[in-house]
Length: 112
Image: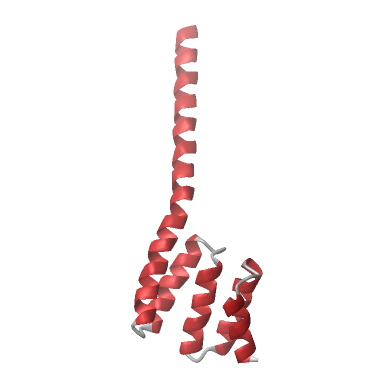
């Protein structure tokens, strides 16, 4: 009976450890996946396919919302699409996340 309890306890600890490791892997993998979406978005952006780029940059931000560069580039996408209000929103996020992002300040000044 005591052996069974210690075996059960050992199994529970193993399961908890596995769950913790899986959570860490999922969280650690998010920025890598965000980079993949960002790179694919940049590919489309550089080819003038702004709607396609928008979708991919948004997916990137869904995985890593604190990426100032992605917010800035998404602002550029909205400028190309003629959506100045949306562009301002993302430029402001970029500045908030990285106050040294001079190009976002410049883009904002161009709008205003």
